[in-house]
Length: 339
Image (cartoon, rainbow, N blue to C red; front, side, top):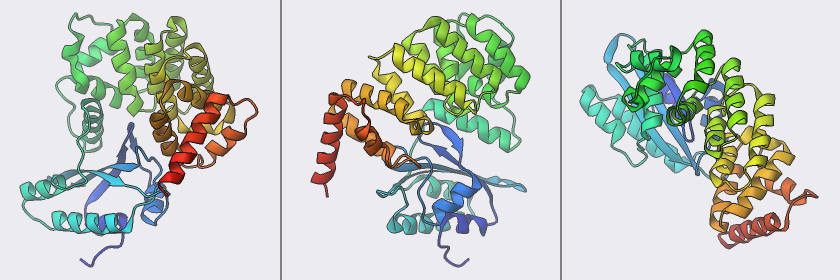
């Protein structure tokens, strides 16, 4: 095989079937158009902490021994693109791995490299559930008990025994009827499993009845931990209007909770195109975080599609606070010092 000029070109000619996922702040599919644009030198659609957290799921429908998962944490440049030196190194490594016939050696090459990262337990459970469903594999042994507990009101004093994998399997294979059942079940769950389910939901797109149920529960309790978990659960929701309204409400009723602010800024970048909402979120960040923390979050936002002009818009906003203005000034000074 001739040397490919991009990851997409290499994989398209490798003979393997594959899917690309992002696993930065949450699990989500990298769509074909976004993947092609990234491989053409454009910005990565989901930068997180200055990197593209890629998961390549590769398989051969006729040979299960050739199924592979490759985790790649690729450093991005200041435009969220992939540096040429990194691309060249990655292509050389993946070419060598896929050309290897021994499945154990191939998997070693796919995991023993400087770009490797190991997802946390929640992300790994979500990825395993997604891969199992896509490949037509059976769900885990934890699926049945977790489904009974979450959807059919069974009781257990040891909900931790259900495992993150069981919860992930239920959410991954959930249909509209299941979503309605979970929305009905949420008020009955104790606080800990309720929050665990909401946090696991950030890897999925919840159906509208579940979105409405999550928001209803959060508004009834008005607890900062529950609101934070709810914002995570709604981060991939298509119900943009409902989520925007709830986000603004949560920010206003918990002005002193940094974790909630960080969830808004890291999980809901699309909502930040609303300058009034981004003003509130960044003002909270300026008051609750130190200068270094403020800089890192806002620099990350600047890499997000459509948010490159966010800082300037907020700085010019007539209602921005002096604290926020000083924080932005510190960010500008820090940026100049490294140039």
